Structure formats: structure tokens, C-alpha cells
Length: 192
Figure 1 (cartoon, rainbow, N blue to C red):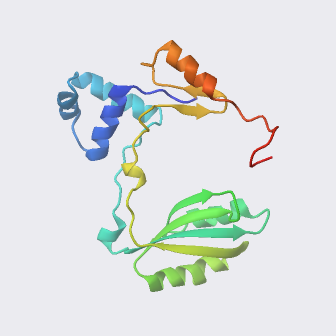
Figure 2 (cartoon, rainbow, N blue to C red):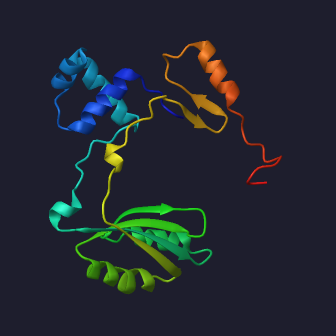
């Protein structure tokens, strides 16, 4: 189930993204609400899994100057086995199962291009089940996950169900829901 959030939740999240150590009292002062309200909202956001309060490492500050996105092609039936091995590798920051002509997407942080080459040739290509890799060095990242903000319209569609911020009126909600038509698998289009 998708948990709806309101404008106060959004404002609290935005301030925590600026400084996750900002005291509840400061957040309350900036937003003009009671500190107890802020603490309760943060606890609920964490408990519901909407936010996770963690320290984020800056790899470049620690000498890991090379970021690379690597896409792997895997033998049929070995996807989960290969993914588990990738998750265990210390160079790997992200592992995602994908669709398209590659099966797994990973992001790695290494100290140099030479270290990246060794990682690919000595580790990735030796994993049983890996058929091929495609590597993209990322020389500059403009936006990380911790900089992502919720879309302004507050609409999340999950299958046929649409979840909206509570402040929208019934008429606006009905109009928006009427414009969403679920895919039925029939008719023309790119996927037909």
C-alpha cells in the first residue's frame, strides 16, 4: 500500500535532505508547527518506510575518484545467483535487475581507471554465468538519490489505483482518475 503524505511531510523531508542532523526544534521553528508534531511525523515517516535516516558516504572525498555504471548480460537461469555475488562485492554500491538487452545494472566506486579495469577483468568477468559487460565511466554526477525530491503533483499510480495528496478536491481527483486508463494488453501501440 502506498502511504499518502501531505505538505507538512514534504517540508520535513526537504529540510532533512538539507541537513539530516537538523533538530526537530529547528524544523518546527522553520515550519511554524509544534516540535512534538515534527517528532511524531519523522517517526511515522521512518516507521512507514517513507524515509530512512542514514549517513551517506562521499566516495570521492575518500579517494574513490572513479564512478562507473556497468551493465551485465547473464546466462538464463543464473540471474539471482550472479546478483547475490555482486551485492557482496565492496566496490558495488547499487545492484538492479533490469529489462532490455542487459540483465543487471550495477554502479561501482573505485580509486582509479586501472582499478576499474582490474575489477571488470578479475572479478566481474570471472563470475560464473556472466556472459558480457558494458561499462560507462561517469565523470560527473549531477544528482544523487539523496537529492531527489518528491514530484510536485503528489500523484503516484500503482496499477489501476491512483493515490493523491489529501488536499485535492473530489472533482479534481475524479477528473484525474478518468484520464488514467489501465493497459489491457489489446489494441495497437508500441507493445502490440
